[in-house]
Length: 223
Image 1 (tube, helix red, strand yellow):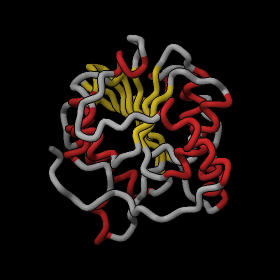
Image 2 (cartoon, helix red, strand yellow):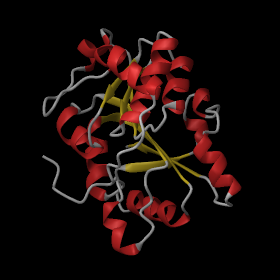
Image 3 (cartoon, rainbow, N blue to C red):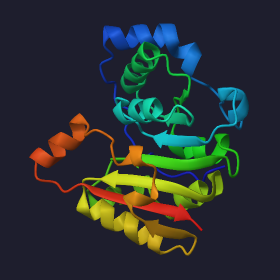
């Protein structure tokens, strides 16, 4: 069980549109798995032995849907707590008849500690996690040594961890946290399949650029 710590998110009551609500009602059972504290057997969930990539906190699902469409022979596990983002992703998955997406509506800390079998992931994508910029809130950041240990356990050897952030202080924190462990090797984008270099800019990224924040890509592999 993951050691208790403050949540890395605030569960706000965001507005769920009628289209999102419709997708949740009609497509939930097709894409969402509810493992509670059980470990997920990906071969059964996806009905194949293909590699599995976890997309943590996928937001509106733009990246999740792009990667799933670009890589039909790879399975993608989306982990998200907000129903609005899940609704949008379900709508997109249904519209494109994507068979290689499954979603867990649960705190990523709990998913990684309770639901992921050892060595079952080929990669983890974590784009723009909440930076919790105030010093007193830094303990709420998702990327901590304990979470990296969980990630290493979940990943296969040479499995990758791909993170993006638009907050310099959080970028430095991530670099420091990975650098404190001898079990990870820093890489660049060329170490990943081409589709990861071709991910379209999201609305969030465009806003960050307009506001003058630098986007940082951080990629590590398990040794």
